[in-house]
Image (cartoon, rainbow, N blue to C red; front, side):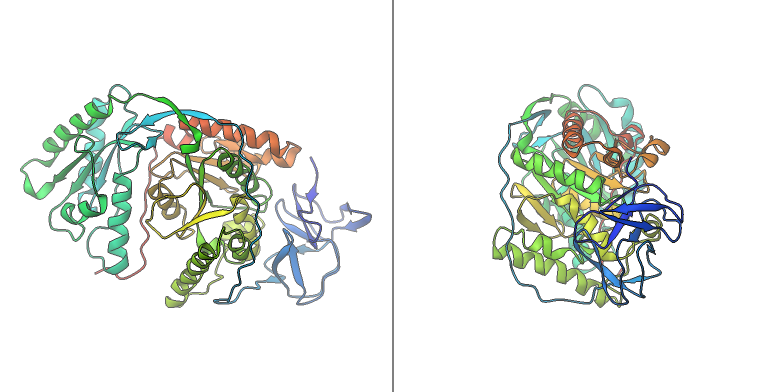
Length: 493
C-alpha cells in the first residue's frame, strides 16, 4: 500500500493514505521531504514551500489560503489554512464536457408498474399526511407484518413531524415530497393516512399526486371513522393482495435512477469512494441510465466544474440559480455560507468547504449535466441530473428518493446506520471503517488505496447495484431501517 497520494500534478499538497510519523522521509518526484510532525491518515502535508496567503492546491484547484509561511513536510489543516470562499458570485458559461460513448446494455430483475414505471422493491408504504398520525402509521406497520405474503417485500411507515403549522414553501415542500413518495414505483401499494384537520390534508395532497391507480393507492382519514386501526388493516390487506400479483421481470438498466450522496466524509472520500461512484455514474449513463447529484452547499467552491459541464446555457443558468439561491438561503438566516465542514469531516482530514466540495463533486463523474431540478421535482431527463437539496444526510437522501431514485449510493469515511425511503448503499472510503462497521457498510472503496484498479472496482460496484436492483437487500434494509426527512426552511406556527 502506498503511503500518500498527490492527486493532481498541480497540487502543492499530498494526502497521507496511512498515518505517518514525524521524521518520516517521503519521496515526491525527485525530492525527498522530511515530515516535521505526525500526519494522520486522510490528512495533507505540504510538498513545496508555501508562503503566507498563497493558494493551497488539491485536486488541481484551490482549497484555501495559507495562514503562514510553510516549508515542505508540514501538516496542513484547519490551524494553518483559511477558506477562499466569499458570498454570491458572478459566473460565465465556459462549456467543457465530452459525451459518453454508449456501452453494452445491462439488465436487472424489477417490477413493471401499470403506470409504465419500473420499481426495484415491491413494498407497501404508509404515508402520513401529518405528524399527528405517526403513531397510527407505525402501529399499522407492526400489525400488517403478519399479512405479508407473495412477492411483497414488507410494509413500511414513513413518520415525519410536518403537514400542519407550516407556511409558504415549507407547506408546499411537504405536500410535494409526500406526493412524490406516493407515486414512487418501489411501492407496490400505498396507504395515505390523514387526520382530517391538518393543512396538508388528503384533499389538499391529492392534486399533487395527480392521476393514480385506485387499487394501488388507498386513503384513510382517521377523524372520519370510529376505529382507524381496524379500517387501516382492511385497506392494507387489500393493498398487499394487489401488490402480491406483481413478479420480478427483466428490465433494461437504462431505466435505473441512482441518487448519489456523501456524508461523514474523510480525507480519502475524494480519492476513493467519491471517484468510484463517479465512475459508476459514467457506466450507468453510458448504458442509458440516470444519476442524480445533490447537497448543494457541498458544491460551493467546486460549482464551476458542474456549470461548465452543462449541455447548454439554459442549464448553466439553472445551475447558477440553484447555487445562488442556496447562498441566499444561508445569508437570509444570517449564516456564514462556508460554515462547513463538520467536526467529523475535519477529524478525517477535510480542512475547508472547498476541500470538501471538490471531493464531493467527484461523484458526478465526467458525464455532461442534462437537467437541473428544484427541490421536490422529479426526474424527466436521462443522464446526469443536479438536484437542489441541502447537505443533511436524511433530507438529501429523501429528496433523491422523491425525485425518483430507485437506489441511493452513500459514500462515507466515518460511517452511519441511517437509511432512506429507498435502498441506501453505504460505501466506505477506507478499509478500516468497512471492517469495523461491517453491519453498516455494503461496499468497500478503500481498496482503491490498496492497489485495486478503478476499472475493476467500478465494475464490481455496478454488478452489486444490479444485484440490489434485483432484490438483494442492503445492510440497512436487513436491519429494518427506513428513514425520511423533509426540508424545512421557515416558520412553524
